[in-house]
Amino acid sequence: MTFKDDIYQICKEVASEIEGWSFAAGSFKNKTLKHTDLIVDPGLYFRSGGCSTQPCVAVNNKRAKKLCELVVSWDNWSLMVKFQSELEDYYLNNPQCVTNIYPEKFPAVDMYGKPGPWPSGWIVQAQAKDYLKKVLIDGISVIKKYFVLTSEENFLNNLPTGFKQREAGYVENAFYEYQGGIMLCIAALVRGDFDFVERFASNDFKTLVPKREVELKKILAALPDIKRKFAETGKVI
Image 1 (cartoon, rainbow, N blue to C red):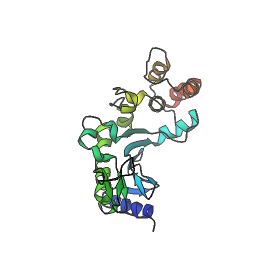
Image 2 (cartoon, rainbow, N blue to C red):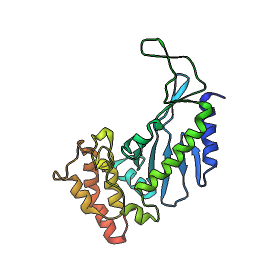
Image 3 (tube, rainbow, N blue to C red):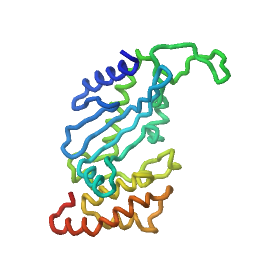
Image 4 (cartoon, one colour):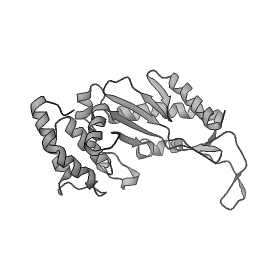
């Protein structure tokens, strides 16, 4: 087996120890809810004989996913939280949530090629199971912190709008940034909240990063038909 095979096998062992979870295609997944899949992704990137990690969690609502495909031609709908984005209450208390894993220790060198100590943030394969189990357990806690999973209605009506995200300049409403704003618009359509979509698309709604205008135009173009269907059937998908 290759090192990648070994790490994937460890991930499968970790998932088998926590009820409802499995490991496939590089991520821990929970599909026990009828309406939404839960994902904890260790962010495994294999290179140079080892792998780096960048854990995140995501939720993927099935109806929102289907509507996303129909309206903006994206084959996925999900909201994601990177572990590093948990600035005060996660990342600073868990600086090794992002790490490098290697089969075993090897002579480390500094940027000048001189021998140096083994970096404190790196781990070896023998430590990988404890690390990956912590990633899954912590990921489940992050999902529970941001998302209400008691029902699909409660999930869609209580989607988060913000956390302090490093890449977005420590803004509080980071879910509005990048493709997150589109995801929230699609979710609003699913629950019949057309006012949010029109408000978000307006010039009065400010974001740090320019909005994704191509997708917003597609949503606004589809809005009349979506409103009509919702008025007739009480649902959009």
